[in-house]
Length: 274
Image (cartoon, rainbow, N blue to C red; front, top):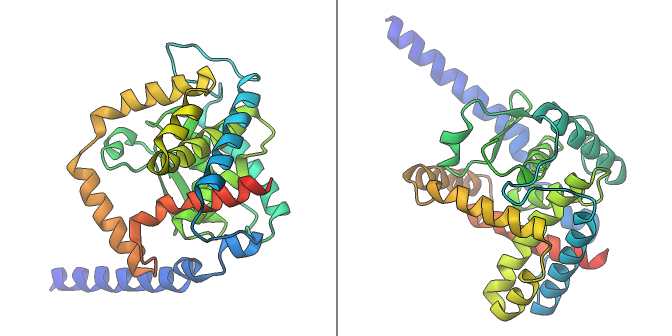
């Protein structure tokens, strides 16, 4: 009898939570798009437009690199502990809310995952825990990616549900940040996304830009790639990807996890408009 009571309680609690999620945060997947708010094109990008945006990202990386120091044997560092870093990003997120009213102002501080390394096998960089309002961040990733990941989760806090739009909004928050390392994170991630797509279209044009990267970016990309090799092709990633794909499709994102990569369209359109 007691087992039935507990099972019934768990079922009802789960049903209520799913209902509340569907009624509230799930609706963000169906709101007007960030592209509409900013009057950005969402059409398929041309090679020239993509090359232009990637070239601009390269130029910005060079500008920012002159303000940063790094040791060639290590990945770059912000020089801040996680709490300080997340609060600096929160300042930028709130400032972005002033410039872009479609972003909700006011953020709960991001927190680091206690078990970051195991989650790396599932390729989970961050999770927005909707019912507590807390962005939880995997700190096992390269430090230059952390500001971007934190800003991505803050984007979910501000009412952006779609993953490609949250990814782009992270760039929107950080690309012109006060601290150079936050700007570096935004432009390093943007270059990575844009250049990966450029490589698919024109490997030669990709190589011409990749060879011209500042040494700090080359160092970060190279060391990060080496460190991440141990986590590739894990079964945990396959399971997590399948579950996430099903979740996104259930919320009306037809392309599922493929939608993550579509931030390249928004990045290209926005960067070329700067």
